Length: 191
Image (tube, rainbow, N blue to C red; front, side):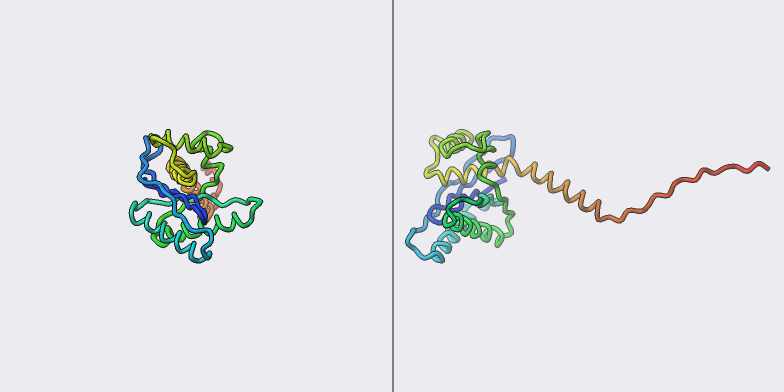
């Protein structure tokens, strides 16, 4: 499986491609950052992010895209920018028919480091170790994008099994039940 991880942001949108399967060594195929100038108009910044993500999709041809799930922060402006960049990434993937998975920051941290409260340095160190890199990717947004891709590769099989079980349970509930009739014992009548 080849996954494009996207750590959304308006100024720096981290992107990273990881290939592999759960339980086997993973391989980094590419890592970088799509940058936009802070003084540019919002629409122009979103177009720049779209173009950057489209280039990554063209070059690496991932099987799916993993995007960081936006969570509430105290700074509404930061949340809005992150949400807008996230939507652009999801749009680019959907336009190509690629599945999109959303992972929370604590889910990603727990997957790669064992702790949902890991800091940026710990995540970067674990990404470096897991992908057998010489140094942590810079900036941290790039390392976070790789961590998203790793998280998805490791968690996708379990998530797929859960979805299949849920679909089977839903289908079973939707199937009309035929009432069972109790078997009536047959008694022989003496002649």
